Image 1 (cartoon, rainbow, N blue to C red):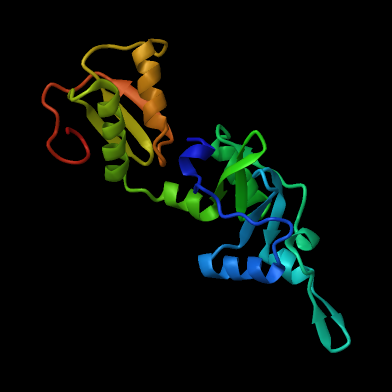
Image 2: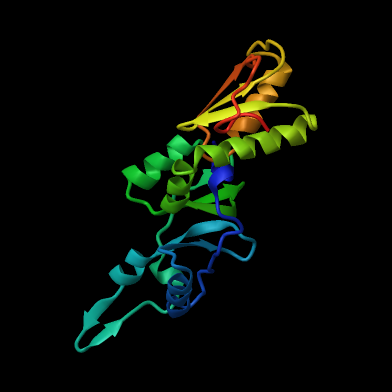
Length: 204
């Protein structure tokens, strides 16, 4: 799985000139903890987080003073992923570094975001749902042929009607399509059983 398989798109973003009060209201209304900050062309400049909002406030007598704009409080530069970034690399940042949201860019234009919630959603997807989505994508690829597909713990087994070596074009396409489904960690290609089971996530 890659970043583009998990990301929420389009991303909700703010500009450096956005008032901090407006950014805070946007976070509260959407339940976000982080917003990408972009220029007028969508290029990533940084992020504004709840911590940035809180950390940027300071006491001056009896008054709390906050920066007027996002640009005064944002964190920059920030790490971003591209569409092909592996989920393992995203997890290392989101879990290891304590980051809650990673912008996904094409070039340096923000096209989406991946959050901890996106990672969790991929991890907990039911095997039946995963198998059904793999089956749908393979049907789009090859028409209404009969696929035997099972999923267990994120490992998808695709049974085909003839032996395929790993380097065969059809095997490459099958693996690529199956791995594009969120929640798929590995893909195995096998020969079908003569009488496939009617239970579980097998036959279509």
